[in-house]
Amino acid sequence: MLRVDRLPGSLMELLEEFRPCFTAPTFMTFVLLAAGLVARPARRTVCGMLAGAGLGGVWHHSRAHRFFSAARWSADAVGLVVLWLVTGYLVPAGAPVVIAVDDTLFRRSGRKVDGAHWAYDGSRRAAPGCSAPLSRGNTFVVAAVVVSLPFLARPAALPVAARLWRKGGPAKTRLARELIELIAAAPGRRGRALHVVADIAYVCSELRSLPAGVTLTGPLVSRASLYEVHPELDNPLLWRNRRGRPRSRGERIGTPAQLAAATPGIPATVTRYGKQALVTIREHRCLWPGVYRSRPVRVIIVTDRVPAKPGIMLVTTDMTAPAAALVTRYASRWAIEVAFSDAKAVTGAGEARNRTPRAVERTVPFALFTQSIVITWYHLAGHRPSVVRSRRAAAPWYTAKARPSYLDMIVRLRRVLIAAEFRPEVPRQPTPDEIRAIQLAWAEAAA
Image (spheres, rainbow, N blue to C red):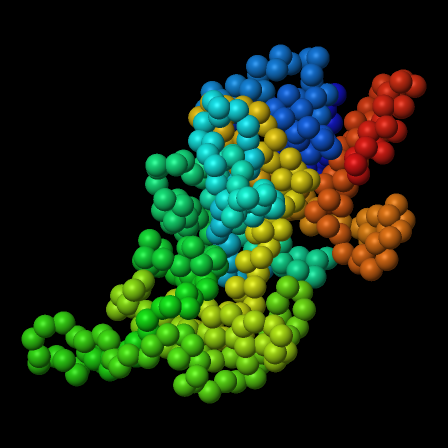
């Protein structure tokens, strides 16, 4: 059985930051359910979290269910504490914060699950006779902080905010805007610039006017109609003695393809997906009235030197960052897709079987925030070179493995939780049955 006084001090130091979000009894439930979720290698339901904490025969299961369905706490408030921890421990002092925004579907079954609907599921293949892969479940819009960790070759995304999308309710882009505004106004921002990266669905008029100090970078649609910026928009003196508003549109440029044909390219080296690549960059300051109206934006067209690889067209409201840095920033958006995969396959987000509105709204964000806590803990106290060596020894077919994965991080914390149950300062020694249980749990921790 996990006990608060026996949890590792390195983990409790992080979890103590969440105490203001809960009442005293609810905080104890939060701590033990989070530890139980980490300790549980399979069947991460609500009762599974309770069993992972060793409390299946101690607490009634309704206590765990009430934590999600009825207890007084806010998922937004918990996420903002995660934001405070991530920006304080993982983002260099003074550096801007990169936020990746996207949505994902967590599969659910049952007619009475709140907010469940049929939707596109990019993680599965289309059934025979269907044009697109579909699944039934809950869709969440998620905002995650993208960080670079010294022991990883690629950026990692740590979820800090999530909202459930309901069919017929606010659009996903509206929920994304609410999450961005929530983060922009949070103390965890620490007064830094926010750079939002998103896929093409979120480069839209809903996100046209973001708070001060927040930029948006994403793909540009191929049919966008672009215009030059009229001189009067940059120099108000040209229309000071003339009635009416200043003219904003200059000559029509056309589509991004036409812009690329008329703009000279500059060779550059960019870092994408953990590798460096030689590309040709074309950039131009212009107007995209269909989305940004009279606000100037930068269009960046990237062409790979390798002819077989397709290029990419980006649009950004960041008018100062170098073009190569913007390409690297947008490429870091892929980290949130990896975080979704880890959340579903390793953390167990979406495996809970609750159905009521508040429980559905809270359970997936709880698992996503626990995943961010695991990565933060591993960065502060868990990383050892032996983690990769032991993983390679257990799976010798990973001959090229040189960096820890998220699975390695959570297995490391699971084993630390097991070892903390029998510390030297605890007077009672384990019984033979408990020793066998520990050995079994140690082996199952990597399952």
